[in-house]
Amino acid sequence: MALSLSECESIVRELRKAIVGGFIQKIHQPQPLTLTLEVRSPGQTCSLLVCVEPRFARLHLTSQKFENPPTPPPFCAFLRSHVEGGRIAEVSQEPEDRIVLITIAKAEQMSVLVIALTGNQANVHVLNEKKLVLRSLRDSRVKMGERYTPPTLRPVPPQEALPPSAMDGRITQDQIVNLQEGKIREPLSEAAIQRTGTFGEMYPVSAELEARYRQREQEDGRDTILEQQLVQARKALKQAKRKIQALQEDFKKTERFREYARYGELLKSHLHEIKKGQEAITMVDYYDPALPTLTLPLDPAKDAVWNMKEYFRKYHKYIGAQEHLQPRVDEAHKEVARLEGKLAQLEQGIVDLEGLPRTTKKTNPSILQGTRASKGRPAPAQGYRTYTSADGLPILVGKTAKDNDHLTLKIANPDDLWLHARGTPGSHVVVRLEKGTTVPPETLKDAATLTLWFSDLRKSGKGEVIYTLRKFVRKGKGFKPGSVTVEREKSLWIELKDDRLNRLKGGPN
Image (cartoon, rainbow, N blue to C red; front, side, top):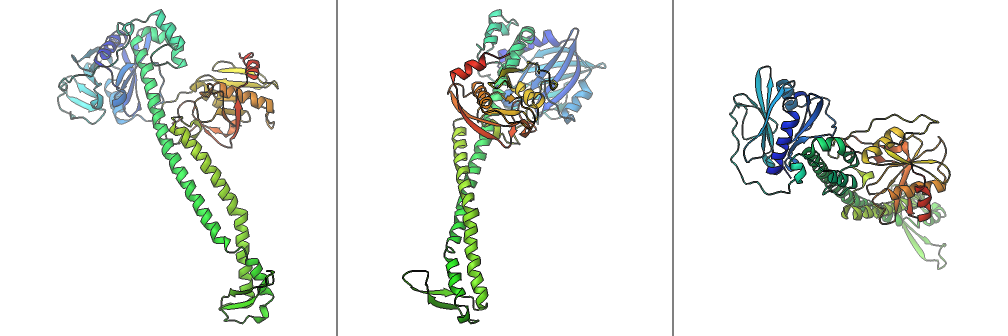
């Protein structure tokens, strides 16, 4: 949902105070429809975010760090050549419209960035001093070289406005406390809460918008991933059922060879009676107590020995099916049951974090900086909680999604044990292990208990926890913070026990 008119007016007032007179040091385009401008003013550097993605069109200062492509896209390169290094002379707004104009002076030339936050028509245009369009971020009705004119005013739908304190550029101490306690309309991340005393106080309108839209983008990304996983789960379930059907058909084809070992033995005792060109032989089945007469077909082009061996060969095919096909059928049935459970979970809206597709929409993960703890020295506690298991082993629990990345990718050793609650958001948990050792049973239960406690399954009091060695946990390109892929996983069903929790919770650092 794009900014309302009143919110647009509020952010323009805030930007006038923050960036007018400042110089544009760097320009980036982390996403196709997102720009960031680093503006240096005396005593401070601000990062201005411009997003014209229709659902999230907005303009505000940001404290977020973005991952930028190695090569600037064409529009970004054009902006760098025309306005990077320029001084922001003015920030204004088209009357009664959500169109912001940023006037930039560079080398005695004036350029104007027109930022239209107008829903599906949201766009960024670069104008020269004659108001001719030099370039647009998106395809537009206004072509390059034409004179820019604002669109005809349209009624703007009413939207929920920012809090009054944000509208007039102030934030109260009560609101800071509410932010810290999570009592806001759309909760801030832990990182956002920590910067409330700086970024939030200096730029309250931007802080509110950043928190709101980050939440909305996360929800949108979650919905996208959920839909992808639903499609994949349904497809995988359909394929698994087809596999069972194919295996069962193959198995049925071999069932008719069940008695062929007996037929081969009967032929062995009548080889001298079989002549080449003979199409069948009739004999007494002395393996049956009733001694019935049995007629067996033969290949007339082959001799008696070949026909006997052919019966034995088909019997061994049946035995092979018993040994190999049946286990595959049983395994396929287990896979169908697993996929049906996963699909039921997804249909309830629970995203499978361990099953994120490798082609999910690119996000902007930023990994907390840090170094691996040296052996023999305790790791710094920042970014994760530390507990001690019943066997005296350290258990590390990530706090936020970014902290999870840092813990798993930077702190944990390859042979440490890694745990996570299956199919639900939660902390990454790491048990420190010496290379070549296995986790003691009580430590595993302690770590699984903490994993469940610091996940969305806490309220249910029970659930499934997966675990594997850290070296089998990887982060795919473009994955959101905290999202990973897991190999060679095992699982443990755990219930929260008060005595175990009380013992563990007595020792966090």
